[in-house]
Length: 195
Image (tube, rainbow, N blue to C red; front, side, top):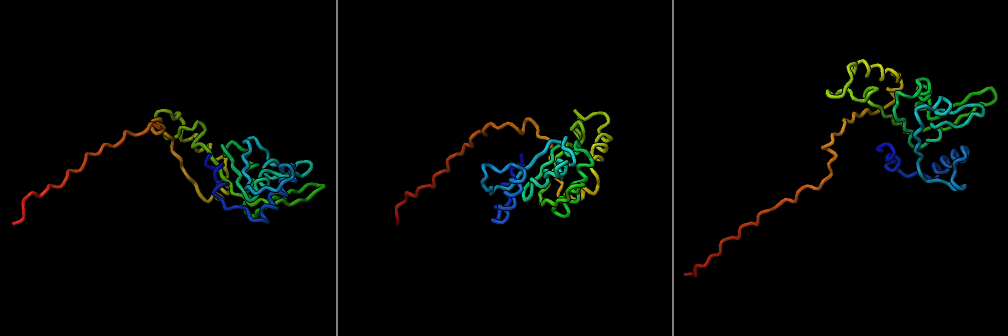
């Protein structure tokens, strides 16, 4: 949910950026009724996406999710569940801002200047650090889970944020009781007559 809101926090597209984003959507057949778009793209492919689906390729050298997210956000939920090769294929586009698709019958460069956001659980079961729910092999489970992401890709994330679990008590949205204030005492009235 937080990742999806990021496009609204980014600055509006400049006129030349509107044209770039609209041309990419037109190539992909996703331009809405042939109208230019002024919205930054947000793409969130499923973790089963292949390398060509992420960076482009296939028989016709099609656009990948990285190019479809050009000037916007590419969100990869459950990051370690993606194929390691597909994730590593994102390293060069993150460095250069473009995806180069080379095939026997085509050599095409697509733009891919993106904000990459990844989300993952601390381990496969998701309960690392929870004394009541963590599995018996929590530490090793976490190390194996994180090892699915290569070090060079992790280095390309500028910020890492741990989000702790929310307790049921934190979700209680009942209104707090109104604060009752005692009235302030009135100042004493001086009834003595002047001398």
